[in-house]
Structure formats: C-alpha cells, structure tokens
Image (tube, rainbow, N blue to C red; front, side, top):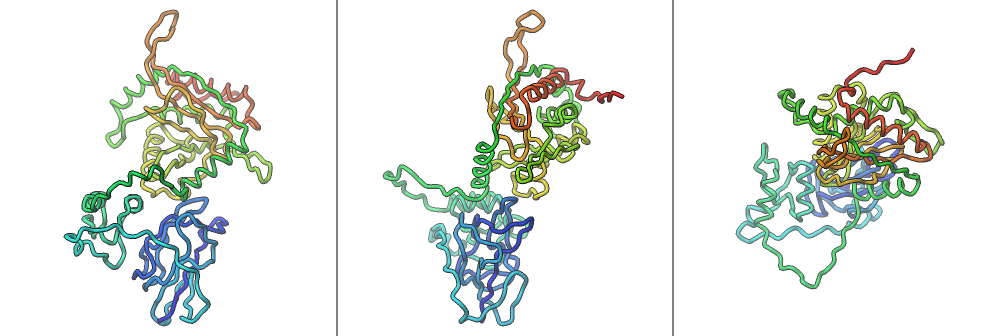
Length: 411
C-alpha cells in the first residue's frame, strides 16, 4: 500500500489558488476514480473536482472557506502499489508528514429502524450540484440516501424523504444567535460589491416610464407567441431597446481596464442579466444581443437563467458582459440604486410596473408606470450623457413599435 498525493489542479486563466466550498468525502472514506470529492471556487467559476484514483482517503487539506494554492497538497489517498495519474504523485508511506485533515461535520443521525437501509454505500453518489447543495445545507449525508432517479440518481424528493426520516432536534432556547461563514459565491459577491462601491463613483438616475403601450404589445405578442416559447416579460423588450439605444451612446457600452488605465469600447452589446439563485446573485450574459430578435433574446435569457440556477452555466456564459440589466420583478419597488458590475460603467434596473393615476393629454387617467433606476460610473459617463441614454430608452419603451424599426444611418 502506498500514498497518492493529489494537488490542487491548475483551473486556468492565471488562477493561483482556489477556495474550498464543500468536501464530499472525509478521511477513512473509500472512493472510486471519477467520484466527486470536493467543490472549489476560483474568482471565475465554481468547479467540481473528481477523484483521480480509487482508494481510501488518508487526509484532506482545508475546511470550507479556506484557500489552497495551486500545486499544494489537497487530498491524500491510500492506494495500491504503482498507482499514478496526472495532478498528483504516489509517495512512500514513510514520506514527509502530510497536512492534518480538516475537521468534518458529523453525519446526520438516522433512526434505528432505517439504519440498515441508510447505511453509507460505496462508489460514486449520483446527484446534481443543486441537490448536493440542498443536502449540505440540510446536513444530509448523500451516501446514506437511496436515489430513485435514473441509474440510482438522487432527486429532490429523495432528499425531502431523508429529511423527514431524521429525528427532530430539540431547539436550544438559549441560543439566540448563529454564525454563518461567508464562503464560496457569497464571499465572491461580497468582495466584488465592496470593490465596486469603493472604487467607482456611482451616479444614480431614476426616470419613470409609461409602459401602457408596451404592456399592450407584450400581451398581444404572448397571445401569438411560438409554441415552444415561454410567456414574454418586460426584460427581453428592454434588452432589445437597449441594443438600439447604445448605438447613440457607445460610451456606456464600455469596460474599464484599471490596470492599464484604458477604456475598452465594444461594438457588440453583451448584456449581463442579473439572476437570483439559491447560491446568490449570478450574471449570465446574452452575447451579441444586437444580432438577436425579440424571441431569440427571450429564449436566451430563459436558458441562461435556468443554467445559472441549476449551477450548469459555463464560464463563458457567466463572463464577458459590457452592460448589465437587473430586475426584481414584482418585488421591484419604486426605485433602487443598483451597483455597477465592474469593470462595466453602467447598469439599468427595472422596478415594479403599477397602474396609477397620471395626467395624460390634459386628463387624469390610469396608466401603467414603471421606473428605470440606473447607475453610471461618473468617471467616464457624464451626467448629461447618462440622462440622455435613459431618455432615449424611455422614448422607445413608451412607443414600442419604434423598437422594431431599423435605424436609418445618416450619410
């Protein structure tokens, strides 16, 4: 028997370290090759790391929230003689002492009546990243759960059943607080938001938009939408209008390279769509939105949101935006102050659309009103230009037929 040291792999794009998000094995566990052993996160993406070999876990390095340098020992396996694979190296049992194993949470207790059925099983546990996260948050050991999905895959219903079988715990009436370690995506969001707010002088601009005609168009389009298309929201219409507006305000479709002191102006419009997930806010990107039609934009927004929420979005799908649109839907409130998604210089927020009395053509009538809350990097976007861009967007949204009229370029 020998030991195999698996080192933190190089995850690309200049990554020098990665944060431990969750361990899926612990010292003493038997694992098989390609079995998920740990989830890690870089500044770019979350990555599931499989085992390079079959063997027994001797020790692990780091607890959730700890950062491990690329090339440093991550996990040590006890394996048969002569085992070798990329990313690690077999070592003799008497080699230099290895890092101590990080403490692991105790497995959830199982009633005696179900102990036999719930005994930890060997081999790879089949479950989606979302269900792995749910199990982790509920304190459920996936190796004790019998999957009812295809090939024994664990589905959400299996987790709910396992949670019901766990004995209720008596609440500790003396515990008035709890501590939650900020790790993974939530840590990354906190760092980026803090950096953006600290370094970018935000200029906020709020304008109300009469979306009565836009709502009428939206309802009409939904009645005649393609058979495979979901119901149309305001978001695709706003994104399409935004691609038209940025032709006249290219200074808002810009990335700021602070290291070089350079503004990078883009011809294509790559729209980030702020999307709330169970892990926190993610911003998948509709690339080259100016080349897409309304239903194509709607389908792409829906596809990206689903992939972001199920943790299936790729690095390319989560990077490369040049301007961001955020919407809280029915929770949108009257106004908001969105934080710029650095290194962009502008973000547009959609607030809740409500019917209220307004003066329209000299009479008080009920119209549907929605506020646009925007923020701009005041270092590079003057207040005049920011207001001009939002006014141009307002003009299109209040007369939605003009969104679809090709712009005539002056000669």
